[in-house]
Image 1 (cartoon, rainbow, N blue to C red):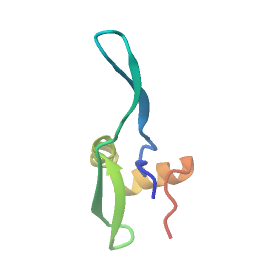
Image 2 (image 1 turned 120 degrees about the vertical axis):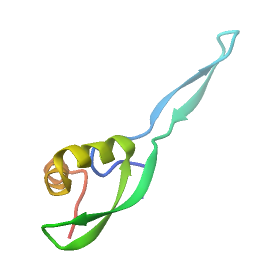
Image 3 (image 1 turned 180 degrees about the vertical axis):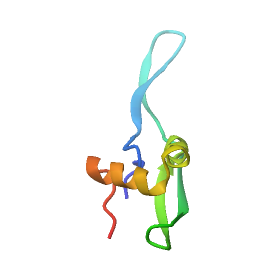
Amino acid sequence: MAKVCQITGRKRMIGYNVAHSKLRTKRDFALNLKTKKFWSEAEQRFITLKVSCKGMRTIEKKGLDAALKQAQDKGFVGLV
């Protein structure tokens, strides 16, 4: 699976390493992704998601079920 947060949809960013001589080489900025289990009260089961730390904060703020519904509407996560 790709390195994409299933709640926020964030991906890696591409930029440059810039040397003192202004020589630029490509690099990527990776996400801080974690595979984490969350307990869903609505479904009475654990749901495993690949989320960034910002995604975890979103879940803490809105609640798991609201965050999942919003992510499904945006097409970031498809749960069975």
